[in-house]
Length: 319
Image 1 (cartoon, helix red, strand yellow):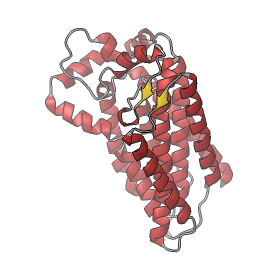
Image 2: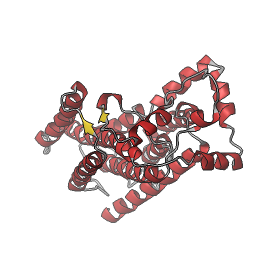
Image 3: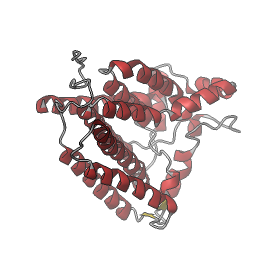
Image 4: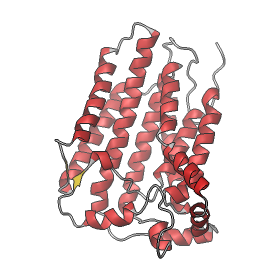
């Protein structure tokens, strides 16, 4: 058997399908408990903000059905009898958990946004100025070149592709411990990001720095500037799961996710460079497509590093 690659961020796992030895494996009950607590917290936040999710909306049924399918598959194949069943079990577990965390995190931004006050954009602009980062120059360069807009949009959307690569590879190569470590790191990163968002709301550089007609509307558009005042009115907003918008400006969750992706993939030789390339492109696109200050991105990276190191420490203790 090949010698596993070591890393500060991960516990090495066997590299061949069919293996049952998993060092540093976080218990499935802990993952399930984290999801249950997350559901309870989001439900409490929605109730406190007098917000609801339409139970009759087709997208609500779609998400519920997909998550239920993952859960049933995971339970039925809890004792797989073949390599194919093991792959299906691990995929159902990790993809289902990742999807649930993503959905809960995006939903939680709405009641949290309703409880915010003001915006810290002047502070973020001051930090960018101290770092000599000119957001307007980046935006004007992208707005002037259609090719950069297309490439930036594709790179920014790769936030959905990279975790599929990571979780798919982990399932295929029997890296269940790595998959659970990734899910746990992503979950902790999301929790820390939401806690900071509650006390550090911002509407982003496009809304504050650009004046006049907008020559190019990036992926994140003006959602923070448009939705935050509406949500703060507290008029019984109905959250549409099919049209969830990212409302967290700082810390940048795209940046935080990118750090988690790289940290997870780095010990895996076959994934290391593809994930690094995809994530680097995503991070280059984030200032404009995500309408983020550089300060947002640095905060997101710091949050992710804390989460990754915390989960790695837990996994080393388990190993």
